Image 1 (cartoon, rainbow, N blue to C red):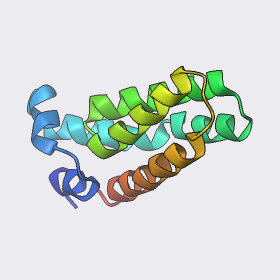
Image 2 (image 1 turned 90 degrees about the vertical axis):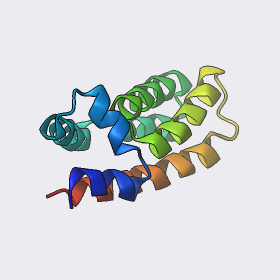
Image 3 (image 1 turned 180 degrees about the horizontal axis):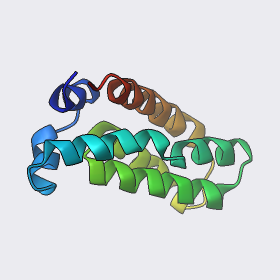
Length: 116
């Protein structure tokens, strides 16, 4: 699958990212593939299980920023919602928000893994 098709599959705007990164599809692809090495999602999941709201917030905030930079719109939106919940040091409702993050993360990773 092409980079553009990857973005379409995850519900993201490829053209916006391409223009922000100077029109280089090779650069976009390289950065997208590096997303698979980012550990913020795993840290988020672990810290939520440990009920560590501060570390979970940091991980969610990092994931949100990575998604913003890469233009992963759907994953950005749900990770942003979770970040704001955790910023308020609230764990009530975090599980439901994390379930949405997990769903979008899995869609995103599956799309990235199918890049040519």
